[in-house]
Image (cartoon, rainbow, N blue to C red; front, side, top):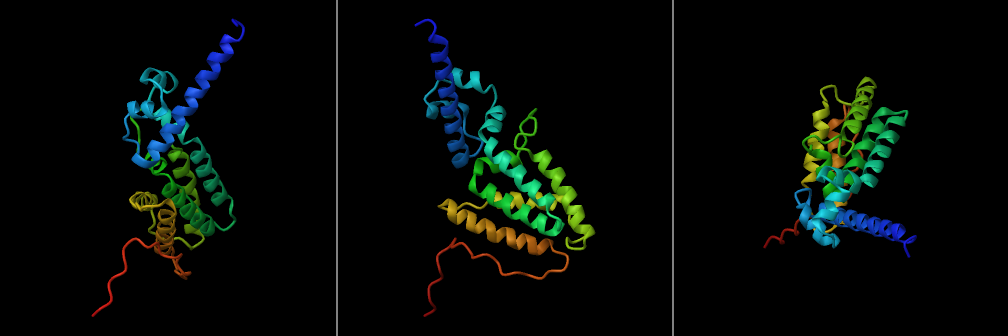
Length: 209
């Protein structure tokens, strides 16, 4: 019995950690990063002391909770930078990152905000530096408008963050169209491709009498 006790305690600790992360992901995605830590503990079925023992601060919890999204974000940026056509690579980055953020409100907020004393919570520094280099290459190739600045991309992500619909599918659909519009605005010599289908965000206007 004594020999099995450490394993039992370790299993309990791992189970608590998993439940905390699951609760954090769910609450961050629906309520954003403002959700109180005590609410996360309550939803996970653990006490606040247990939560803080595993995750001393909210930024540590957010970093762990969004590990999958962070990896996906880096993959998107790496794929875009690896494309021999920098404009096509930049378009891919804009499209995919907007969609990634549209699927998870919590990750979007973590990416766009900065915790006091936090260390690059959502990989924002890596993404910004990599995309800056990609954008310069697209400019040099004559495809990206010369007056584009990186803050323009941040503005796009801020605006994309404001898309809220009743379903994730509709939200992603709206985000794709928004990203396509942004790309057209960034292009130096527009040759506009058809926009993605529009998400139905408002009811159709009644027929005129």
